[in-house]
Length: 416
Image (cartoon, rainbow, N blue to C red):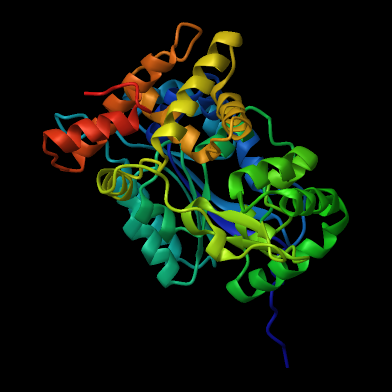
């Protein structure tokens, strides 16, 4: 009797990538024109980085690579993508207002893939367009893992629905070659139970390499006069061991990594994150809320995703950015890192994500990030962007609230 033959599954995670070319390219243009050019002309470079390099169970194999672009505006890039193994789908404008057919074509192809014969483990959507939130919901309902590649501000709901988000600054770093290690497919590409087991096992292999960072954190909190803001602790850990910035030793983010240290080190994510020595302090010793006028800042941050920084933090951010721009030319990925470090050193810690959000906003209002920039000019341009975000979100303010908004967003540079 003939036995049915079964073809063994090749190693690696089966993935599908759908690229909204117009959205990503234009988003990168506002962030880093050089990175935008590399994205458009060398897709194989960053696609290989996302594949996690060599073969094995932890690598990705992109069975489907689709790129959707407007042929009228971007046809000159088609050859680069076809040579890199992408299927290019023309999505011309179908309306008088210039909107292309990318969204509907991408969604139809993605749903066909989801219900097709090939079992896809992970879906990549390269777009910051929150219209794809419902598509991500369909993937999750089918127990598929999802990764969003964003080149621009990402809506909160869109971000939360995805399993992983490749942030703008991380994607720019990949494009510029700043990240030399491939993005591993563990946690984000395996079935949920296997991924959880891998996440628990991975840190053990990194114990030796992070021990110096752990010692630095322990020394810092044990000598500090009180709880230490999380951004300051993260900065000190990364100074000792820069490799942690990739995935925090397999824990994914700083909060999870520092919480597992033990040795009397306690962590709380409240109000931006705090770390303290449990032998001397407790959560009762955490400082009170930042001294900002109640109401307006919380409302704006909640509705528009504007970073919930204090007025003093915004002011320090603008001062640090102006100083760096006046020193020497710097690409925007490095600028966000340097400004973040300068703010931490100045005692007004600001996350890199917040800095990137501000840089993106300055790009949207066409502010030139060069040596002519001043702190006052940066503050005014950023405030214009915040007011526009509020307008689009249909937020309404009276005269007093509008004045408070401008004073807060500008770091105190604009009083009215």
